[in-house]
Image (cartoon, rainbow, N blue to C red; front, side, top):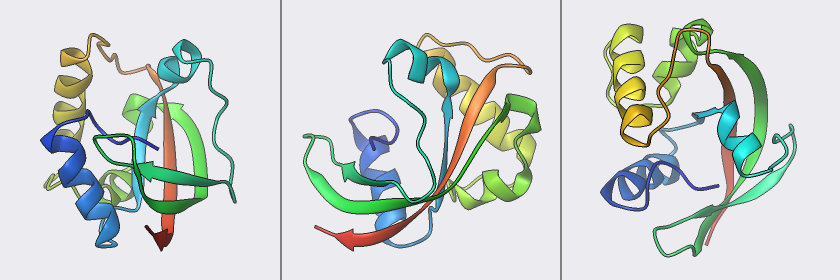
Amino acid sequence: MELGTPDELRVRLNSLVLAGRKTVTTGLLDEYVEETEGLEFVGERMALLDNDGRAIATVEITGMEQTSFTEVTWEHAAAEDEGDASLDEWRDGHRRFWEREGMPVEDDTPVVCLAFRVVAAS
């Protein structure tokens, strides 16, 4: 599992995961299609990778839901623990992130909401 982009963002997000504060993430369904990856499933264990592709922890998927961008709940957004004060702020930040990555998001864009827990730190 690679969170964010390989820079300070990933360092910050991984730190939140390792501290037990970030327990969910959101990805675009199109990214799975583009990378020809299957969706994660409950019980799957994955390596959490740092900027150099090294495993820093093992996480276990505890929940997976496909929905549209505007149907992401505040409960999910808040569990990302990225400092957003509201669902609108979360949506604005994620829209900007994906826009910078060349993947503009519309209200009906399909997303994958993952919940996870750290089972081992490396």
